[in-house]
Image 1 (cartoon, rainbow, N blue to C red):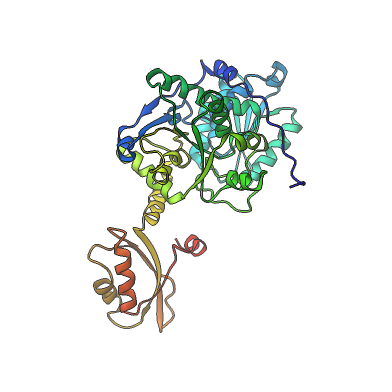
Image 2: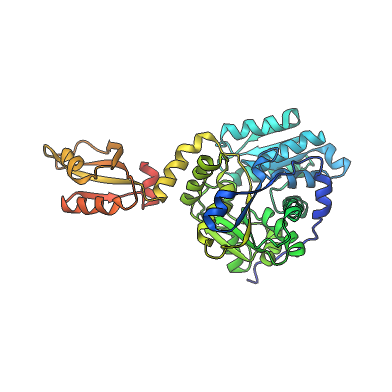
Length: 424
């Protein structure tokens, strides 16, 4: 612990940020959701930051910081490193302020995100694709900033960024107090670097202190939860990057200094559950949410008992979801729900072995979605990759019992992340 120096909690100017942003950002709606309220027997409100100009709340922090730079700083230009929402909020702010901006993005960034960033920034933004990872491009961005005497606009770890994100909380209370007199009982907030949770959490502790602030992280990237347990920010060795808007290896020092005092509970949400929620919100509500934006709704099952009869707000943080990812989202959802399974099966090399598997092992509604021989030269047995989609979760046990009864030699690979990643 002595090796980790904690930064002091900064002064935040959330009310000032709200004034600066008033004519720049959309005042996004706080919507009562009848379906979720009925399901959980409570009053569920969604803060729709997915309807923001750049389809996420990130514009708030970027513009708030940039609008406070000196004329000399603005003349020299600004730099950011981002593969997603921060880049788009930064680009929009550059155009709005007539400032030259340079965005560093990893080379493998989806073309859709590169195109969106250029669209929002128009001629004011230059995109540089550097390195294979975000860490690589962040290092390059900071070196470029110093070399050219420009100003770096971080994605979360700065008081002005946090203050800007905190204006989400200002709008929530403004709108809620117009039609309700009872306090908000629970606030569910997605956590990546911690800027949104720090800003909104700080504002609520001042203006709605009885509200319980629940921070949410994907299971594969528990950086805030780890930091809170250790008492200081910790860099995780590996993370699952699927929830790209909330998957960071290390939360910020400044954000941690605030979050440790304003977050009442941290909760991890499985990536598969997030995927199921994305599909549910699209099919049932016609709402498009990105993985990070779905976490505040995905977690409600885990809090079902606590929130009965209560008033809760879920921050839907963004909707920048590339349509090319939908197949992966559906796949992850099916696996999480227990409806999709992948096996390596070594079929005996005799006539009728495959026919026996289809007719006797599979249930009447089990569907083969993938069948691929891995090797073909072994005369004793031929291993095959078999993907099966089940009608209901309970069909899984019958499938396994049938495989044992007919002495099928199998390994289920979707329970082994490494093998699944290689083969599927």
